Length: 329
Image (cartoon, rainbow, N blue to C red; front, side, top):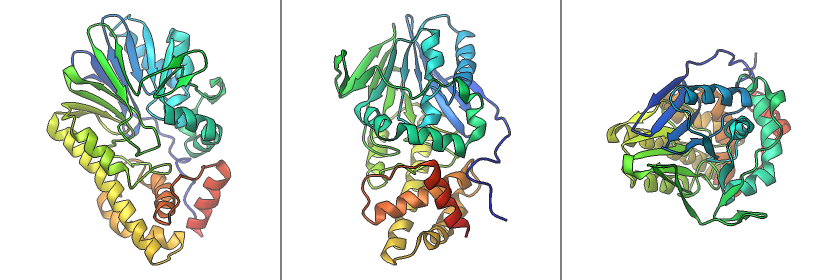
């Protein structure tokens, strides 16, 4: 009997935690589901990653409203994936006036946002309950290192003043996608990494630039953050935990890509490459949240990149299922 596709059998709700990390910074985490971050200033609130649906976003808004009545003005899209961005309309309804993303993310929404939306909804139906509320793709209103019609150019590093706290927003390099963006509250040492860093959860690399990712992680190491909100997994507190989270992600990426290079050099097919990768990955990571969900997509992308496919191929619902069936055959 073949395994259920992706996370279609993952129907159990996760325990959500909303915890304060510093004077102005909060983490919204959920046992391996996608995380969000919240920065609360004296004037405004910024949310990093908008959740998968308006319903999920309203839960986050409710938790924000339990600690502040300040307006939620800014929403940061750390990258383009549907589970991170499609809840944005709920924040706009709450009064958010600026949706921020990098030039790379803006371009990827146009290139493959619609395909990604359908693909992710099919992969992870639990996260997209209530998807009928989603009005369509989420488009940024402020594009870092670029611009949108009528708005003018935005510098490559944006500083947002929330009143009493300044948030630095920029793209440290390719990794999980092209154009991954972070939020950094330097005065409090808190980093919101999006999916550039994961901890004790599967590291999805289906749209990644694996060869470049470790250097991007080195750049994040150089910040010497005291706390970090990863894309998935619990919030990391203290420099030692932050270093552990970055090292965890780097080990996943380097182990995966190393196996893919070996498989490509031996001219294995995709199923053989998967078996070869499992020998190294399963003993280290096989127990973590969404490992089985991520690995087929990860091996497919890693094998492509090892074979010289520099730009990740677009995932469609049809391609998803063809790949899954090939690996189950």
